[in-house]
Image (cartoon, rainbow, N blue to C red; front, side):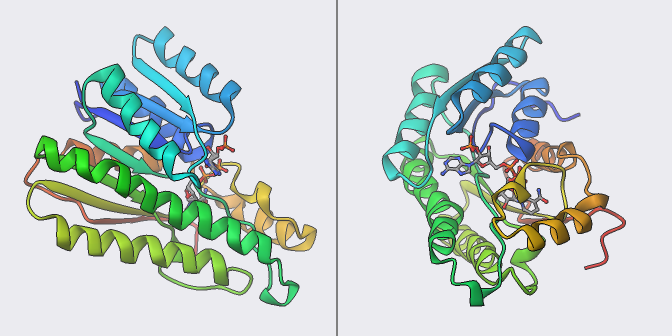
Length: 245
Ligand code: NDP
């Protein structure tokens, strides 16, 4: 386990799946974590559990499709713990469907959350990282940010965008701010719950039977954060051993 003592980490999408696992694991490693998502009851319960285990945690109910909410999240980290060392842009949804079904509302939602949510995080934290002279963005893309499959055109588009934006950010920010992209394969979470087409959902749930625990992705975050500040882990791709593509 990496020693992350004193690091202040804000995590979007921390009410379930990968974000929840990250909050728990990073807190166990000594980080002070600030959790953001929409489901307040879930955030409250996770924070209470982390505190009972001796960790430092707080939460804020946010919707990452609202720019102000990301500003509130990074402010909360500053007010509560005095600084912000890492922002994990993790919130996302995956309502897969064939383009022919014209589920335009779902396309827009993915763009708003998966892309704009990450951009609003950058807009909120970058000025703070500049002022501090240090900081670390960890953005969650996907295997779908490397390859496109049927039913996943828009989702993959959003995840390619996360990689493109993160790489552009990395090239621009210079030698004081680190940028990491983590691209998971199938991971246990609630991700398929937003698929509205029952046939596509069944197909995906069947495919995802070999999913690995979300802690596997949280460990990769701890690895990236735990490196010396002059070491920037840029990209990590993690699949279940049993995932073919
Ligand atoms: P979950 O559905 O379990 O978690 C998604 C999280 O995002 C929840 O905490 C949800 O919280 C939050 N969220 C969704 N919409 C919003 C919003 N508008 N504002 C704030 N928070 C929001 O799935 P995962 O843990 O799997 O997903 C985390 C990330 O990992 C996503 O970006 C996903 O694309 C990516 N990923 C996941 C893979 C997997 O196999 N699990 C594979 C590749 C990538 P709430 O509903 O409370 O707001």
